Length: 272
View 1 (cartoon, rainbow, N blue to C red):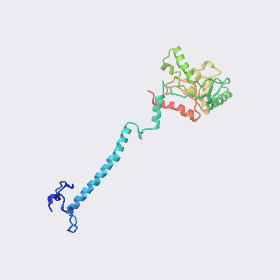
View 2: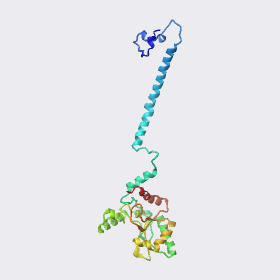
View 3: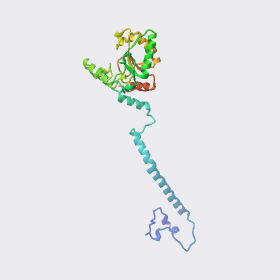
View 4: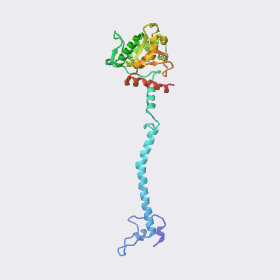
């Protein structure tokens, strides 16, 4: 056997190769009995087989596994796939920030079919559940000698346009100045049918004034409104930056109203 044949140089196994380019042990022999492969040749064959297997595994990883990881990594870096550090709260905060206008959120207008009167003449209305709870609250207050008077309930977007732009022009207020005391159209809690402005029937001069906080009606509301599902919308130093309105109360006594209004609480982390 010519030892130079196993020098590590690749052998040409194509059909037009000469017989001498093929190791003797791999030649066809019709006369000699089959012989066992030499240890060196066995090692060579094992090495070649192992190399082929490793090549197949590497190809499988590259074409099947690697591309998927690459796509996922790019998508995550572009923000299209939520990561473990993202939360639903942060997404909600971003949505609220988009909806906010001069400190006020976008609110839907209540359907006419869901509005019920809270006054005898039917001019002031709220959503049915809120209207029922307001009337129960007013009756409870009157039994204690307190007269709660509704000043404003549901307001349409059209009504709010006049309040915001019309009165703002007469008072020479910029939109930012006007927004401190009145929501832009489409952003008033009164659109929802859950908000109500309340006065004290004994001292009407305090209606829609900050000194309403000194009335018996306001003190009663502070101590009892929560029992009926109501809360003050814009207390002092509220996170929305709206002026203090002790007369403005909203109903949060059912699931729909609670979810609708408590989005405003998230503005605390999104306002500059």
